[in-house]
Image 1: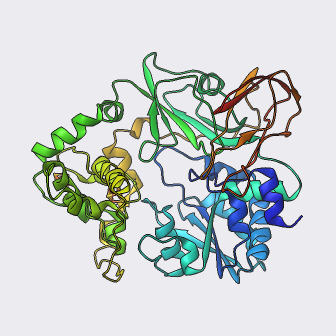
Image 2: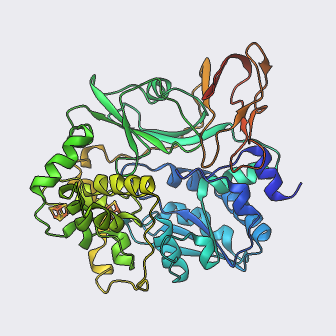
Image 3: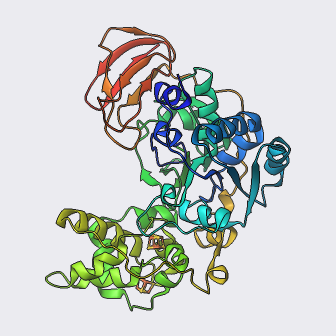
Length: 437
Ligand code: SF4
Ligand code: SF4
């Protein structure tokens, strides 16, 4: 098997949150390969911890991908503030045709468009992907999984951090399918009785109150916050409230656009114009919706820029849905030219954390080699971009750790799924497989 086939076999997908099946990237031919170790979501430090503790696996995974993609050079993107991780990674790059790309501590320096520009000075065409400018980007944990796949090991564990209002903020591996309840217990339990859980981050992640939700191959971490925290109060409003308030209170100051990282890179994203669509329910809406097409949903406009605490990011989300429904696509005509104020308007992470009222939760999440040992796991059949996987096991069947339990449907984009514990299949549905020890 070549590397792409091994990766497909092992079910590797983008571990940074995107979940794009990695075998597709491994079979492309590009000029540059980038490792994304930027990790800019406030409070999430799992990439830092995996770089600190598993540097040689990550760099080996990168070397394997360099050769599979025929890349002439690799760039390892990492924040300059993460000196300890740099000390572990940098010596391993010597003589390997990979250089370190030191990044500032800004949000969102991990956006692929940003990272590709920082490393190569190439601008991805509007609406395009890194491949369009000869690049492939993978999260550092994905490189770890690529290395494991090359040794025949499937993705059965997820590296993540649990932090916020918990007694022992930490980073660790856990079986895919572990419930949030068990993750929180493993992190010592909560320090508050009434709480919400941000999954994957407060900026781009989702909010849940359901402890029975489970870890997937893309879960970067859980941030537990008291239910009365500002961020939960904001996020937990009904959607119609976001848009109703925005319709009447937006004064078109355009700060949301002026701070938008995609706008500053030269893309035609203008959330203040999208906000106008909230007031044009009969005509004109479609015109303003177009200005959301290239939004990467980083959340900066809603959670940092808007002085009125409105929801321009959510207006962009809504606009994108409307555009998809109507089958329209906005194609930027003007050339992509970096805004002259880009560097001056970048948002330091510390400033963002203060604004989000998270300073008191800004902990280290040290790696622990122990792992939760759940009595049962619920393994979702859709944990990746593309089509859901198809179960190939039946209720009552015994499965071993790492055994394939679901496969990519023929000729579609997707990823194989493997059992994360040894045990008995107790439930198979269209959306998940449950396995008990
Ligand atoms: S920053 Fe807020 S008030 Fe200003 S234009 Fe954007 S949404 Fe409206
Ligand atoms: S969420 Fe807001 S700031 Fe981020 S890319 Fe979209 S419009 Fe720009």
